[in-house]
Length: 246
Image (tube, rainbow, N blue to C red; front, top):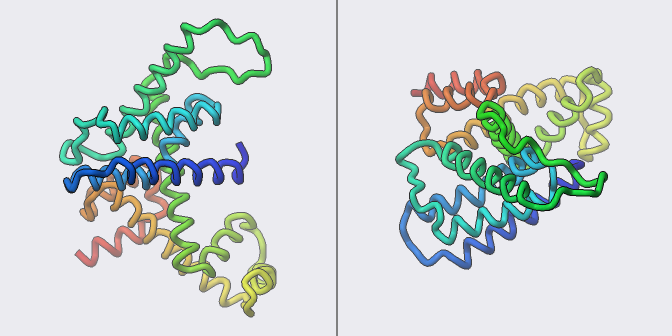
């Protein structure tokens, strides 16, 4: 699935989930409200996991909507933020849904169309499941961070994205390209400075995303999560600045 199609599908799922939660919110309980907000916030991670596990966009969309419906219906009422990280709860629920779907498919007649997508292993190893989920969760965090950077600092977003796509381009060339793209003059020195600040801002925003998902600002918890998600390299300096502030 190309990036544009993925973005469109994620946007549609997010909108559908928002409407679904709004239609079922009749409780003022803090925990229920917080869980609903987290579910809506990370709807993309849910779809990404289903897509990676089953390799079928239509099935991934169907299961994403089924998961949201089950959640608001109360099927996961035992979920409690006090019992652990939100992503751990989410991971278990999604893995169970994929397993149930694969078992159901095994009972169907064999697919005769050679062009149809093959199913993933119906009995994936736990290590594979963990890696697949962490990949989807990490991609969602990074995607949300890029979006936050674009909203907070469009120039930083443009500079950092251009550098990511053109790592060997000289600063003078980058300045010329971005001057046209942004509609304002930039020189090589400004590009270098903006690149440095963009990296710092990106790291701070990524930490904010992780803090939000954990529900804690404790730097030890943030560090453990960064290590688990293989994101510490993006945020090491930012985390050290937060630790220094106490």
